[in-house]
Structure formats: C-alpha cells, structure tokens
Length: 469
Image (tube, rainbow, N blue to C red; front, side, top):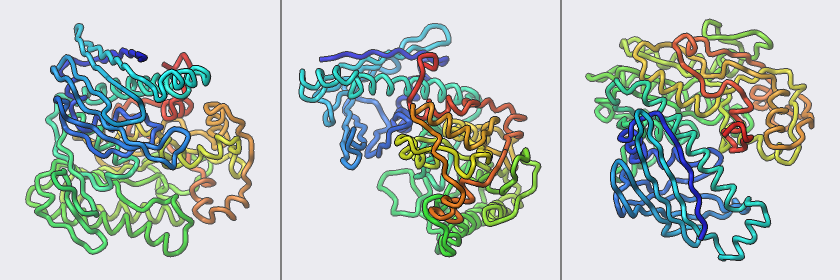
C-alpha cells in the first residue's frame, strides 16, 4: 500500500467549503482540466452509499475507456467524508477528506491510500519511470484540485450576499457549458439545462427543438437567468456553403426563438446572457479593439451581427441582456488549444502564415468566472469582450506553447498551406488578426485569473514549474 497526502487552505468558512463538495457540480470541477472524462453518475450528496461514476481514456491507450466508480463510505458534515473505489484501474483506492477551520480559513486534508495494479511489479515499473505512471499523476491531479477549489470559492464569495438564482442554460454540453453548469451548481444555484435530445428521467432538463420552432413558454417560466451558449462548432469542418449556413442558422434561429419566447413570458427573467464572439470585429491587423468599435466585414462579422440582433425581442422587453464576445478559449480538452496539442507534442508546431497576427485568448477559468460576474452583477448589460487583457501574436503563442510542452516550435505553416488544408475556415480562424481588449470587464472590476498566456497554458495542461505551485 502507498499513501499520498495533500493539504489545501481556502479563505472560506468550513460550512461553505463542505457545501461546495456536496454539490453534484463539484465532481466535474474537481476533474483535472487536461483529462477528458465522461460523467456517468454524480449523486447530489456525499452520504454513505452515494456514488460518483465517470469514464476516461486509458493512460497510453486513449481508444480504450475505463470506468471509475467511487462510493462514499463515511459522512460527518462539515468535517469529514470518505470514498472508496469499487471499480477502477487501481487494485485499491481509499480517499479521506478532513476539514478544519481556523479563523476565516478552512484547511482540507486529502489522504489517499492506494495499491497500483500488479502489486510490487506495478510499483517497480512506476519507480523506474520516475513516477510518471502513478505518483506524478496523483500530485498533478491534487495540485489542479487545489487551484480549482480555491478559485471557485473565491468567486462565489464575491456574490455571497446575493440570493441564489434559478438558471436555465442552453448549450450546456459543450466545453464551456459543461464547466459553467458545474461551477454554478457548486455556488448553490438551481441550474437547469435546455436540451435538444430526449430528457433524462429525474434530471433538471427541459426539451426544445429550435429547428422546428418547438419551445413551450410554460416550460421556461420562473427562471431568473437564461443563458444561451449553443451553436454549431465553427472550427470542426471546412466551410462549404451548406456548413456556413448551418453555423449561421444554429445561432440566429435558436436565439430568435428563445428571445421571442422569453419576451412573451408573464414572469420574465431578470437577465438574458448570449454567447457571441470576437469574430464580430473581423480581421483588423494591429488595430486595438474594444467594445466601442464597430463590426468588421466578412462572413464571421455578419454572423455575429445577426446573432446578437436576434436577441432584440428580449432587449425590447426591458430584460437585462449581456453579449459574451469570447476570444480563443484555452482548454486542453477542446477548442483551438485541444487541436494544437498533437502537432506541438510532435515538435511540428510553429508560426502560421508568418505568425504576426494577433491572438486574443482567454483561459477557460476566466471565461467561466467572467460569465458568472455578468450573471450576478445587476448593472452589467450590453456587449463584453471575454478576452485576456494581454493578446499575443501567434508566433509568440506558438513559442510559449512549445516552451510549456518542452518541444521545438519553429516549424512554419505558410499561408498557402493553411488555405489548401483548411480552406476559408483555416484562413479566418488562424490567419485573421484581432487585437481585442476587455475594456468593459476591467471597468466593472473583474479581476482576471490569467493575465499571462504561459501560466494559463500551464494551468490548463498541468505542466507547472516549481514556483507556480
């Protein structure tokens, strides 16, 4: 048997800290941000007998799926809970969580007792490989959990004096939506999902069919906040005429249906939050852009203008409306960064089209926390750029990502190759230059977690230097 212990201190009382763990969303929030994991079951309780189940790619064999079933074996709120692995990759895994409070701080002591597969042979293999199989993975995981717990509780504390909200989220299954729903749940909000598939029995879900205009007003009565994040992925495929129409329609038609339905309600929500993108500004070279700038020219600006305009019925009804003009959201499990990792890990990354174009990025954490700020701040309204205050040129981003991954990053990808491989989609998403600043978020006092792209990448990938953790 081997043991691992990790101590986390948060600026929160013990009751709030324990409550964070008790919410179903904590399961998703505690997943390392670089792990692709599918949540199968997460009971909204830590009581004895409750379970949390997830599937994940096998280490070294991502095409194989492994299942981890954790069952809670002890429960003494707000001081202690424990779980054991009843199914999973280890021969055994027992995890205790002990919470103690001193003044305004709470300390969480995690202690794990585990046995790797194949007993002594497994331990020997892990030792020979420098702990890469087990020990270093466990340490990375708990470092990530510490950061997530500290940051989540800090963000929730900023609005602790405001009543909890009843929130409806469309587009909840995507990279951003999944984490936003989990985060809001850990803050004690009642979160529902607006889904196009069949609803799950017992889940907080409401069905709609935006293609056929099917959304029952009675189903969405009584929500305080409605958030719409849905839309076809713009970077998933080459842009044929049909694909471009699907990208546009998935945003504009669904937003218009939702906005018109909300405007017709007897009990209207206090706020409507709509995803948009910095594609609004188009290719603007070195020009510094903020929310005061007009839209650009071309396909993406046209889509964004129509997208935001589709929310007009909500604005006309006097409902507070926020538009999230998001930049390149950095997450290891998807989006632009997820697509870059494979070539960069092979040492084949580098400047694209010369690399002079500006990249306006934002970490997934700041995307979630900034959205939360706009939800909870009753004076927030209008368009907001969700980007870091420090955009970088693409060649600098490539250099930093190569540094973090410890790989060379000087293999150029000329413009003509981008056009041949990816067509118009590649040109617009990788070669357009957008130097965007979040002026309105800064004016409202939002404090970014990640100002520096290197630290954002290290947090996303779990590749820290000693001074970072």
